[in-house]
Length: 109
Image (cartoon, rainbow, N blue to C red; front, side, top):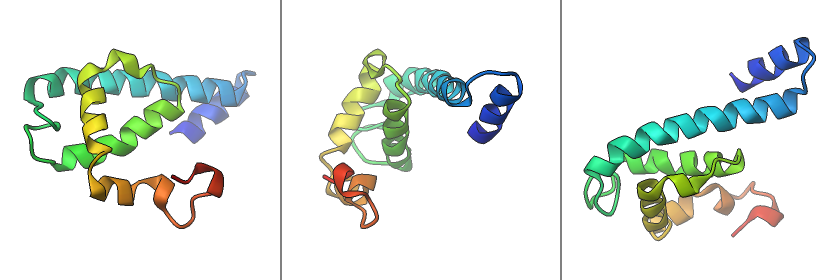
């Protein structure tokens, strides 16, 4: 989708990198707002109580993407708290993109 947005921006004479990044930021923020509203009602330590669920493992890369595209994470209190708790989980640490063999040195943990 991002590729198509960039192409459309280019076709209408706008900077595809700027427009693509803004589109991604805006849509990720909207999705985070929706998730925050849901998870605020179900969260304990993690998204659904105090047991890690698939929702939490999906949340980890979503937070990374949101930060990458400049979403203001200060708006998402519950998501932020869950994200910090997940950062302490060994499986999350080992599975994170910064720990993979093909991660460039400057981005490794």
